[in-house]
Length: 516
Image (tube, rainbow, N blue to C red; front, top):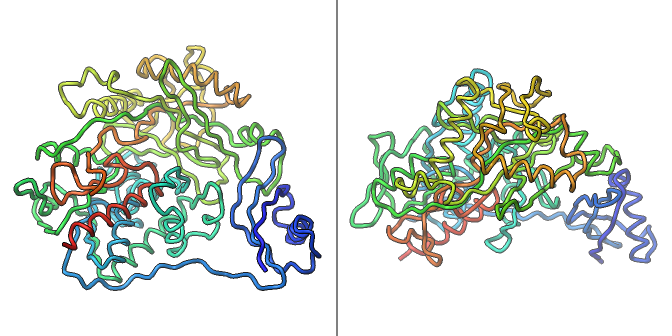
């Protein structure tokens, strides 16, 4: 017999099987010797008071546990129908897998390199400040998520099958833990292998993947997209085009605009990365309680400042700050964690919402006002860093008090930091929002405001500043036949799982279109 129950377990006992059996037996009011297994179904840390693990478990009584994790079957495609997928981030890869399930041939076209070759360009960026515009933390196989953490938490549970996305990742090499953790995480050291495994599944079943293949033009006839031009010379023709290029492919937005394909600006957020010592965050969040079984503590903060949202974004416990620029002459910072989350630092985006009032000076360049404002801050950060990737930074206390930081604390950011008066250089609405929010957040997390914390600029790529509008029912572009905007770059996702779900949804929509 199987029973599903909830348990609260002290951190020091979470790996003690005998203790788990005893707690389950007491709750079920049965003899502990009747329990054959306790299997975790859901696991989270509740740190509101003294930290405990909250578990949802299946308790097996006098029977063996089922050891079943669903695997999805993929078979070589036989249909002559062919769909071009532009981009191999989570949206593009999961769209390709879904099309194979539906019997349609996916042809993935990726401007960057495969996930292994990308490492060389990331090293050049980290160590020598050289940005490859087609191979960096945003562009290449796996997209922005492949080397920037692998966080899998999403609120998009109503948009699609979150469980399936996680199971597909496990099937391709991710740890089973992502199926049970409340905030699942793979890690930037493990996710590239998963991405490579997905690539092999696509190729094995008749899909195509073309790396170093930058889309330089669209082939459009009478408001219908027929295909794309790659590297200014090669043409790819398909029955439909699924556009999953991510939130940083600015050239694609301009190319769409050139072809008079409708775009629209959308709100987003910009600010900085804030970095603290991880032991400090642990002490605050776990109320000074320590256990080797507790994960590096995280946080999620938000408030309103003058009707404008200010919030933490992409928090990376035990992580590092990375340079995520996609073009020379700009600085963009992002965060990542390895699977063990054992860095001595904790970092998070600390961002302020941006709306059309903020990009009013760029109004004549509709719909690119927000994009121009984003670009302006990235280029300013580069100039403040003396035209290097040594990002401008300031101690949090100095930012609030309006002082130049004579020294900066140790940081995880490998290219280095340049001390700058961010309280004078950032846009006014960001300065005001951050100053008020930091004080509010310190009341929620006493110790958040500290001389040990630094602000690093600029965190700008929270989401796309442009949306590619699509029909709610067909998911096709509202004016261009056979064009299916997908994922973060189209303005319909935010993170690995939501982009993967949108990829599956768009693949279903493409199938409904091409099957007729």
